[in-house]
Amino acid sequence: MKSKIEAFLDTLIMYDYILFGASFVLFILFIILGIVLRKKMLLAIILILLGFSILIVAPTIGRIQMHNFLFSNTTTLSSQKKLEFTEAIVVKGTLTNTSRFNFESCRIIANVHKMSNNTLKNYILQFKTIKKMSIIEKDIAKGKSVDFKIIVEPFRYSGDYNITLGAKCK
Image (tube, rainbow, N blue to C red; front, side):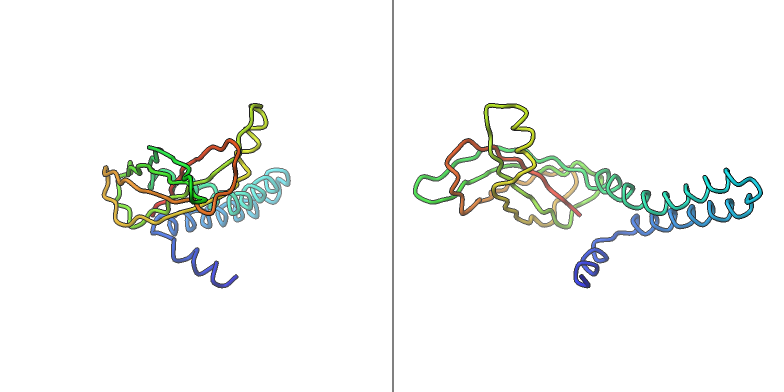
C-alpha cells in the first residue's frame, strides 16, 4: 500500500497540487459559510454537504479531466498479425502527441477482446480483456508521431478477437 501511495505521489504535477489546493479552499469556504449561516438550517446543511462533495468529487474528476486535456494523444492501429508458429500477435501502430506539452514517457497498452456476432454481447465483451500487453515510449515532442510494435504473447485464443489501443502519457 505504501508503494502505491508513493507511486501516485511521484506522478503528480504542479497542476494537480493547484487543483487539490483549490478544492480544499472551496471545502473550507463552504464549511465556514455553513457555520455562519447556521440560523438558516436548510441552507447551512446544503452548503456543508456541497463542501464535502467538492472535497471528494472535485479532485477525482478534476484530475482525470485535466490529464485528458493536458496529455491528449491519439493511437492508431496500423496492422495486426497473428503469427503461425508462435503463440503471439504482432500489433503495429502510431502514437501522436496532440497536446501542448512534450511527453516524458507514454505507456501504450494493447488490449485483446473476444468478438461475437451479437452486438450487445460485443459491447459487454469489450470490458473483459483476454490478454493485455504494454510498452513504454520515451521523449515524444509535441506534434510528433512515434511508430511502435507490441508483441502480445502468449496468445492461445483461436476465435475472433478485436484489439484496442490506448496510451497514458505524462
